[in-house]
Length: 329
Image (cartoon, rainbow, N blue to C red):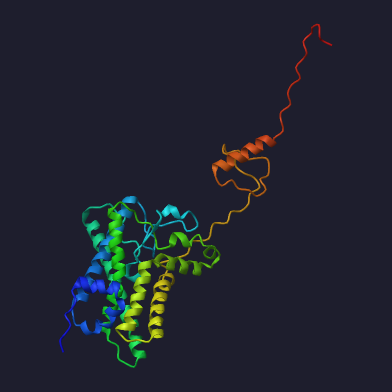
């Protein structure tokens, strides 16, 4: 039988993105190739370079990275626009979060800066490697439900190819930064905080929604679809077993950062006790009760002072004597 000519690297990636079903059905026949190693190296490099670029831009802007979210700190209860808008927010390693890299906010130059840059790059790329290992283990259950022994090598290749959309997102982000764009809130974080359900949820549910929103992008959904297609095509898995594997993976990615404390819900607002007397801008105590109202800012305080002056009794004017004259009396 004449063997089919193996596809090149560009053709391999194009087939993966445009014909994922056909790609994964033919993957077991070409799994002995080494193209997946090149794809893994490219994904590692793109993730590392994007993380370093984000850290440099945040350091130049004086923005601190929020724990567990690959984006600048924002006020979850305030204006989403303060974080620079909604960004694609590449989730390193199929949505696994990374914390603020050591020394990312330090000025550039010196051995510490080089060490911080390498640390940032290795952590971002290593996140993908860790994800591929976990996904390969989860894909083993698909083969076990078919009564066959799992092939970890094939499972690892499926995990690598399923993360190609995230590498594509990283490349688009680099182009966006090169055009003058700035990193913003990751995923849909800037929108979920305006959702009434989010405001009324418990702190744990808020943290879960925040974690899910920070990873919810079209590219992340694309990667989950490729993971499902790989389990169905390459492993010949049942649809319910493949779907269960994808759902378990999505749950692990979203809930684990919440359980480890990397993603936390915003703290409750400080409760302000009512006051019976207010302090005027000049430091004097007001004589009129404020009925528990506290002046939160200078503008409201000045308005309260004006109302107090209007309510104060007017001073008595002295009676001026009427001068003597023809109209007197």
